[in-house]
Amino acid sequence: MTNTNWTIDPTHSTIEFSVKHMMIAKVKGSFNKFSANISADPTDLTTAEIDFTVDVASIDTRNADRDNHLRSADFFHVENNPTLTFKSTKIVKTDDDEYDVTGNVTLNGMTKEETFAITFEGQGKDPWGNEKAGFSGKGKVKRSDYGLTYNAALETGGVLIGDQITLTLDIEAAKEA
Image (cartoon, rainbow, N blue to C red):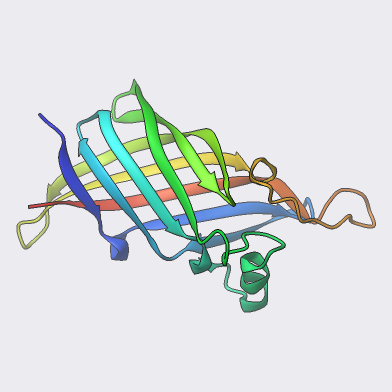
């Protein structure tokens, strides 16, 4: 099969994250606005080309004060850096329907190579005859690698916010006509 173009279905897709809070719990959230240009054969992602863009201002941790702080210059500084982008550079098949997708992540004006584990979840037609494909993924990034270093020391030792961010993706994409 050859690569075809796919469009993310935003109503059936999510980008979520979690980070340690006070070294004892996790805070979770999501980005609600994102898009991608995907050229792929879903049954063999090794030749895929993936360009992903996330609207960082769409961050949602279910707490307006925290979300506004995350949008501020202490963290994402969305006025100067409104997007997080990912552009694939290498995709390696690791098992049946499992891939390591490596690419350049740009956030807060800094670019670093990152690798995410991606699973092809399947493909089929919806009730209206549209071809759909599903993918899930997970990866970890260090926020300090992107200059996101705001923190506070805890009285008991340690820090308020962990450095490692776990990202989880669930994507449903529609084949373009």
